[in-house]
Length: 390
Image (cartoon, rainbow, N blue to C red; front, top):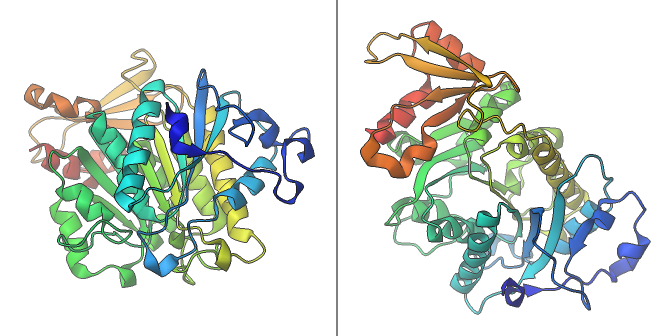
């Protein structure tokens, strides 16, 4: 029983309980695990909020273990717009005796929810909790793509234990490995060394600098559409918009930009997990960061409500196929465009002997990638994907 992993919520805090909420508030539509109440029913649930109060993985942001309910207070007071799917709040995962115990608890919860097609939204805690989230997919033996919205790569040193600065490196090095692709959105060059950038290129991972992304925020849509799991470090948002983080800096995404990216993530039919980490209430001015995180979740759920179910694998009659010949490429590049959403994919040539990667043979892309191929250039995201399959 998953109930044994969770502590129930106490919303007698400051009168913010179900009775005190406005009639049109989200909190009235969420089945939550309150004290003296029953554990939520999973039947027909689409979204599960999960708090994890463990910040032992990031000593530089102590206090990030206690902000989940601050976010909930803001989120529960937001208005219902279009959320026909059922939302449940499972409460907070009990802190393990060790950090590894917390990872294991997260992995077990994710392992149980994903087959039920329930999207866990994990509120941390330090970002190394992403490792536990990934471990849930690993238990399912599911090869996944991870998108990290972060000002840094968190590769660390191979000999170091798992923490907020090393968890990605640990995931990359693990065997057997269930990571097909990693993408970073919003890294800031002055925080990332040249060696780390070179390593990402050698691994054929996709990385996008903050300035590059902000020049055309819509180009983040195919990046997050390719993800199974999106993890957000709040330090990627500028301090003026999200002060509740010890590593917040003057530069970063604006609040509306991060909300737009999470809206894109929610719309993706493929995405099955979201984590938002490093919120520190002790540093939060007037609850501004908690309010922003609540709005980020709202936009993500709004995206889930707007899913088109237009993956070409699911609806073969609802797309147009284009084939483009490019010099020095053995076969034509096949592009697929959905007539329901106008979204684009590229089709990867898949070796039948590598069937563990078959779910990745449709690579989300944009119209710009199609234009690039028409100009006799191989799109970068296609090139990286082909190198990983070589």
